[in-house]
Amino acid sequence: MSSRPVPKEASSQPHFLQFNNLACETAGGKVIFATDEWFAPARNLLKRDPPEFIATSFTEFGKWMDGWETRRKRIPGHDWSIVRLGVPGIIHGFDVDTSFFTGNYAPYVSIQAACLDHAPCFSLDGDRTGMAASPSQFEAVAQLNSDGWEELVPVTVLKPGYSDSCHNYFSITFPQRVTHIRLNIYPDGGIARLKVYGIGNKDWSTVPGKDQVDLVALVNGGVCVGYSEAHYGHPRNMIGLGRADNMGDGWETARRLDRPKILKVDKKGILQVPGCEWAVFRLGHPGVISRIELDTNHFKGNFPDSCRIEACNLTKDEERTFLLNQWSSDNSPNWRILLSPQKLKPHHRHFYSGESVMGCGPVTHVRLVIAPDGGFSRIRLWGQPVSTNLTRPQQTSKL
Ligand SMILES: NC(=O)NC(NC(N)=O)C(=O)[O-]
Image 1: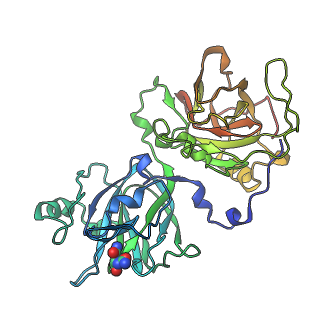
Image 2 (image 1 turned 60 degrees about the vertical axis):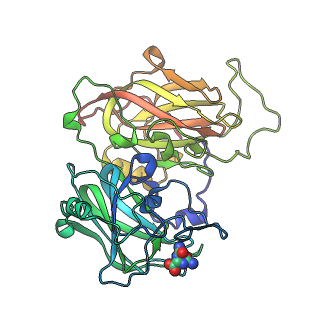
Image 3 (image 1 turned 180 degrees about the vertical axis):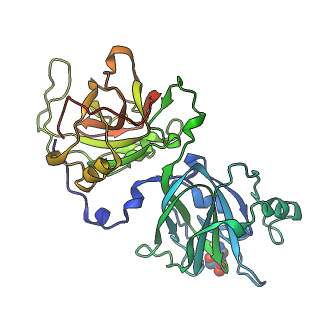
């Protein structure tokens, strides 16, 4: 299987950017408190779409800004907000993105984290008067007292939001489950986006033994651990919540340049092409997959011609080795066929069960292979979680 070299700028970025954004609004992330939202509300921090700047756009409060922006403080203290993660999990890094905040960006930041599975839910949306929070809201916030919170990022200088300096990356080693993030800015100012990169952490003890679970879902701890190409959209989008709003919320590759000039199909109508693209996912829990959904929602002129799915069992150490080698064909896991090559339809939910799904036994990883290229909206892999004591696979298929 041929793959493309990773673009230079992609390989120089921190590895944690490949994980899921646990705070994103599309993952269910919510801002539950902010000390001040005068110029722009803190919920903007969690938007999925990239920040925008509209030079001519003003509101009654000042310049319209696509982020969280507080007033210039004339009293003691600093501004802060609390984010409830959409998917509680283990955090590997942050991106504090100051895009377009240049003369008004927050000059310093610190980030704290807590696991508050039973914290109250409330919001300050639209409150722009006085000091923003009413006494009752402050009382509720007192339950979220920050004293016991872990400091994941100490007070740090931020860079302004010019295109070459707007990303402020923080790599984190904190192996505990987090449900809430407290973003402190000093003393005030604006931040465009807060991205909290990590992997969902589900309490599997609450899942009844016989239940079928989507083992690859973001909410169940699934994560993309490698891919050949992601020009227009990252494969992690395929394991997101619900159905996608548009093509942007899916995996989309560039058109492969090695496609023949004149295309031909085989007897099953599958295109005869030399190359393909692939994405590897680690399941949230090892399991036996028995039902598959592949959704090409919104991909109408650019859905893949066909796809197959492979699966394997890997230990953490084995995964690390394959990851370091970028899952290359010279050093690849023993993939077994879970779903044989299937011709795909545009903008369509494809369901496979029964004999269409091959018995692979318990597996930890899957690889979706698409030919020759194109876009995919969602992948769902329902199965039964099983213990991690796995047998070794026999049947192989190389990258
Ligand atoms: N031009 C500005 O952005 N001014 C102020 N901010 C907004 N959003 O109006 C400020 O100085 O903080």
